[in-house]
Image (cartoon, rainbow, N blue to C red; front, side, top):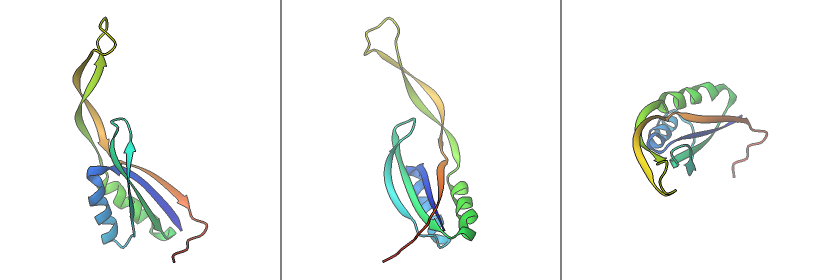
Length: 110
């Protein structure tokens, strides 16, 4: 048995949970924060049998595709007080999934 820990962007989380559950995978959803944009993300936990691992990873890859998004970068203005910033738009990659797969030594459900 494997434990999949998938960290995805909030806007992908509900679609991913639905897609996994439609294929018979149980999912635990945790609200988390982090990453470059300090935006909300979601950590999903799912336990899968070894022979179902690739199917689950395929769903995560399909639903959690990375994409480009414009955001504002805050850059300090040189020669000004340390609190003076200017903003300009930059393109960043968002979405996608960070996935960890762990071997489960023991699984107990009460």
